[in-house]
Length: 494
Image (cartoon, rainbow, N blue to C red):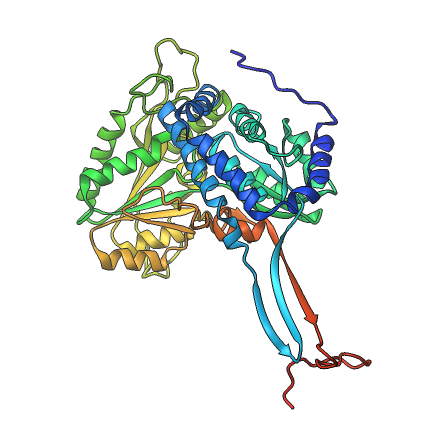
């Protein structure tokens, strides 16, 4: 079914960047309070139920996630718009007076110019709202390249901003695929690029963007681990949290739970897995618009086939068990849909010799593709280990580092975990530890490229550059004499 057709012309990229470039001088000189006031009005508009429902409708129609999940997609993005309304506070500079007689120095943040956002299919509202509101609050202008798989929500979000009186050229949308991205990466007027998506594309964006003197922030793939202490974790709430974090949005989240490590007695671990299978089996798969549906379709037939192939290889070629197999699920009325039911792959008991926090090499069982590869589907890999040290070692040895969680009632275990685990975002009895935008999104290791984070203070730092001014004002012949050919030494004591 074709829902809509999107306009694209070969000149679209240059037209959009030129419009942003031409709008930058006027927008960057617009008072900070005026910029924030427009964003506050925008946030108020997005809070209207009918507006959020319109955006969520297009998300569910094009992405497939449930309508309730789509509404959450919009709301989490709105939180970043709210935070952007106080960007002026985070842009405050520093000053030091009287470095020498009559000499003062001040540093402050200025806008970069034209910034670009390349957003993914899995959060058609939230991720664009991570990007352009904060960028324009800092005085930049913007070109957004939404996902070609689900572009309508992004286009609506920009339309609302224009309807509220945003000056022409400040925020622009350009559609397309790789050709569009390639043009943006090398365009001489683009100063900074934000990207969220897969590892292969993200590595490419980072490499080409940096090679062309762009500032780049890129959030890439993930393999988020949860550690469950079977002896003291709250069983009911933990099982519910694991199922929701692993299978919500059909597992198509960079912060989805991919691996559950049960720590403790092997028989206890088996009981936890059985409970988790029962909970996952109770989730309803279907059309995201139907009330009561928990898991919608995957984004494409290719994505579904890739996930199913990983399941097949994990079980048939690597010997894993599959206590819950979601392949072959059929939804009435959508027999040809891209549905994959919740799936659990059990790697069994994993022992690490002489781990002790240092490790003795990863067991061969962790070469299983269900563990080694990012599946990006409703597939959870489970395993058990004897000790918390083993769980931390396995988590840290994985190349990804977006997030990790621990479920326990032990403060000592939680403290040990939070200090030793190497993930950028840590949850304690929280399955998806995505921070509110007072903080930054802080991925780690191969989950991120670039050294400045999304939103929060890190986002302000990304979208601004420091300018430092040293001034020498002399009154009636006083002050510091900076004449001559020698290097001036400020503040030297007499």
